[in-house]
Amino acid sequence: MAILVCGGAGYIGSHTVRQLLEAGEEVVIADNLSTGHRAALSPAVKFYECDIRDKDVLKKIFAENKIEAVFHFAAYIEAGESVIKPLKYFNNNVYGMQVLLEAMTECGVDKIIFSSSAAVYGEPERIPIDEGDKTFPTNPYGETKLIMETIMRWVGAAHGVRYVSLRYFNASGAIEDGSIGEDHHPETHLIPLILQVPLGKRDHITIFGTDYPTPDGTCIRDYIHVVDLASAHLCALNYLRGGGESNHFNLGSGSGFSVKQIIDAAQKVTGQKIKTELGDRRAGDPARLVASGDKARKILAWAPRFDDVEKIIATAWNWHRTHPKGYDD
Ligand code: UFG
Image (cartoon, rainbow, N blue to C red; front, top):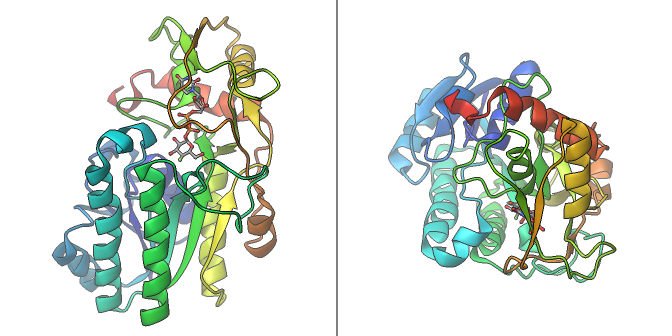
């Protein structure tokens, strides 16, 4: 039987597809290529260019392929944009999940692994953030992810669909051979933006806020390598195959790094001085987001490989310096 990967042409989806194939799994991808890239698709994989809000096409995929489980990466991800265009997010993310689950239940597919986010917690009550902590999103993006989890919970109770929701912290890095990587338009994430400076694509990086209550005044985040995020999905699949009940897990390293520390690490990795400017805070940015990752390690037997932020940045640099225009190169 095959795994249907919705959003398999995107950043985290494409890395997960690689690992599924390496593990000998059969994979089918559904992606509307609105943010994903055709060049990120693995050639050996059956690909449907389609939108998950189209139930007829989903049911066709389920009819044409024996699908054991769905991996759901097909969602919009920009917190800032979601504040300006909330309905865009509710439509694609929430309605997309509804249609996907309708098609799954109508076609008897009963396992789903879902890309959730640390954004479901909003401003954390304590650090590290534990899965039992309060969820109170501070932007529509995080709200959609929380609602998507809620929909899965009720659909699970009514129809027996089991799910694993993986709450990613800051996804970063690229596969070590540099063949696929991060390519967002526009790019808003810290590490790729920093690396645009040594690539000559940007004059400087602006540090959003230097007056946070952190040791150096800049925001602290938990950077987790995309290859480790991908491996967590395979662990989650094994967990569900073994009869595990529906559950949600943080995916983070458990270590926090400030914006200034990330810039210093990028200077070491690239061997170049990275010019910075001090800017205002970006609206909605919590001072600190660091995961407690113990639950995934214990219950999913997840063993992340990357524990060093310089090594993570080195893999991102390997991708960006060889693909300065992303997949357009
Ligand atoms: N930052 C800068 N300058 C920039 C860009 C970012 O200083 O030019 C700072 C941000 O203010 C933040 C940190 O770098 O403090 C990381 O910012 P990112 O935009 O890379 O990531 P976020 O932490 O804002 O968000 C990411 C994902 C979200 C997810 C969240 C969960 O993009 O989808 O992690 O932790 F919800």
